[in-house]
Image 1 (cartoon, rainbow, N blue to C red):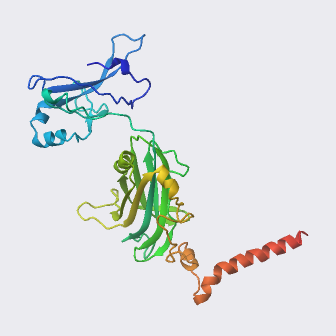
Image 2 (cartoon, rainbow, N blue to C red):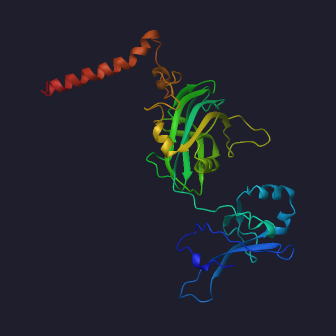
Image 3 (cartoon, rainbow, N blue to C red):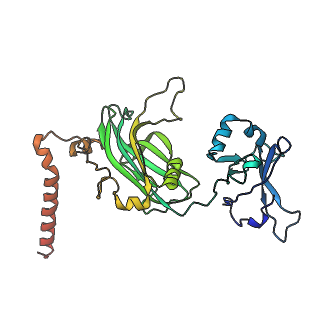
Length: 342
């Protein structure tokens, strides 16, 4: 069987969505080879070149009880088959996503093949809520300024927000606990997608730069594809996710360097439009509402995080921001008066 008429020009990620039915006799036709070719143009000699191929064992599938059960329900999972060549069998030459169904020839007229259609163009929104962190490694002698940074890796992301999004900073955590209540939003992920994952980094923040503590990776593709298939929103967590650092970790004596409590929301862009949510704790601050934590964010801990200490003003320290604003206002008035503007 040849699909030469369906050639895809100028891409290494072609979409075919083609269905082919053939009569086979087992065990004579027990192997199915699928080859992917590089079509030669009119000025090339030697014909089409083989990119890679994969061989499926049809007889093995047919005699598998578990495979025949899902085959009877037409619930065969898609396979990502690696492509290779006989000359270099161990070298990956790409992959092909496909599946195979088989039925007795007598039932072929009664049971149609599963539909194979290209998914409709659809946009998905991902929201990540970082609630808090625990057991964060103290980078300084007795404290750590904690921040979580997230980086989206998705080939189909077209949103207005940056792929790299950071929480605010929890200053001067002395017990390894940091509270954030912080939302990250990634809208307009256009389906279908090839990749979709999120890397989260745990860092110690200082004015002169950050110190990397650990990282973790989340595979989001399966959740995005699930929403695109059934149009139902997905909510996962909150779950406690552990950070790791391969550069500093001793495999024989692993060290606890921190965990983040994270919640995932995935929904269609249409549903997201009816449940708006801002970045961080910005408005609209719903779905879910996030409260600004008091811990690690008052002026005393903020200045201490940069190496400055402030005297204890008791209840008066709550008025420090007001005094600062008032002082700036008075300086501005004096300056404008000296310039003759007032």
